[in-house]
Image 1: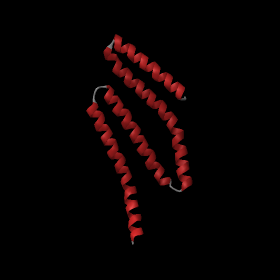
Image 2: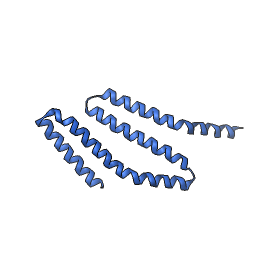
Image 3: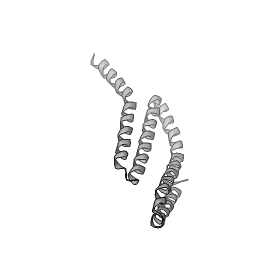
Image 4: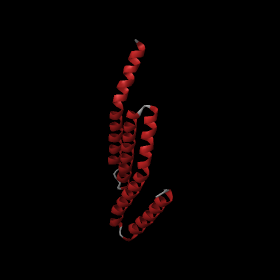
Length: 127
């Protein structure tokens, strides 16, 4: 499904949530969460072919070991942003910022081995 289908689902969901908010306010947040998860699943279906192509490009360039880390960091960022958006929609801005902070720290932890490699290369160049 392309962007037109995703946009259609998003607009339908938004109108349904707006209608439910007017009629029965307590039902809107679970419907919003379900719609967000459906849209996230649809986005993942678009993400899968992209992952294969990125891995192929990295392996052709001789940097295949970096592809897994970059893809994992991208996945962490997407999941954290989705979770933070849901938390903000539910009025929990502090929880959203905590999720984003944790995501940034996890991505930093993923990058540490590359920083070690870079420092070793710099040390060898200085000798």
